[in-house]
Length: 398
Image (cartoon, rainbow, N blue to C red; front, side, top):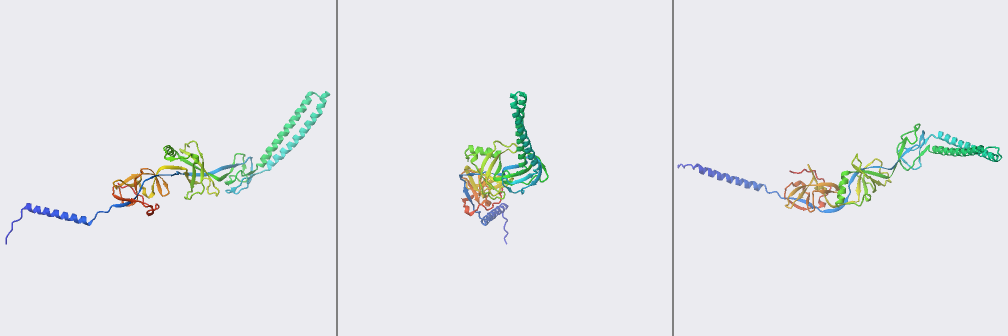
């Protein structure tokens, strides 16, 4: 048996290196073959365009009666009866309260008696004057006696006029012991009841609210006023004039109020305690759907916004820094774009900043992409992705 001499050590290392490289290359080829390349994600996009749309800002307003009328007694007296059903509708002229009329009936009777007395004194004064006038020519009386008789007649006439005035006042007070509704409307509960002594023009008995029409008062923030003024001056907003604006209401249960309102009052200055400007809109209220004190959502109509950008709500995501969208850039890769989403228009967001005409915004396929990912962009078909489909909140991917 022949004995072969061992290979030199450098030869053995060379062979080992060749074998190792071959194994690694073979392994890499096998791994690459077992994990084929992922296909490019397909997303649906819309191309941003600008358009002219109604600009209808919405605020919280509060309803109030168009005429709240306070009911107070014209006379001081004892409250004898409350004559109306509390919290109901009342008509103009309906009886509300009865003040005890007895003292006022006595005052009327006394005034009438004083008139009769004054009339009797006037008759006597006239007769006295008629008697002394002829005697002056005969020098049976002095001129002073005649002058005194004339003065007595004038005094009697004045006393009669005063008595008649007292009767008018007494009759006025008696008539006002019965308190009636000065307008039609909803009446509050009574503040006082039978047996209470009420003071003239002081004690508030109740309030009648005229609720058709109704006022809705809105406090518009100063920040909105300043921005709107800039937008009007820069022609971003077409504004027909303050008193050409109309109002639409939404109740707090999101039902639409059927009647349109008219803006009829804009306070001249800001309220220092709130930093807002008060606006009033008048709404018909034939069915009593609006009540004093009720809170409603008020949408002002009449203004239009030029060069407006609208995108589907589902395209706007919420990140740590605020709302953003995914945009497909010219290199067909995804970019993150921060946006200013101001208001909803049906199933769309109005975007006030961050997007320009021609930008391609991803609408469908949002959960399959991230910043920098290459994508295949195809036009969005609204019928395949209803705007009511919920999109879970997504945070920016770093």
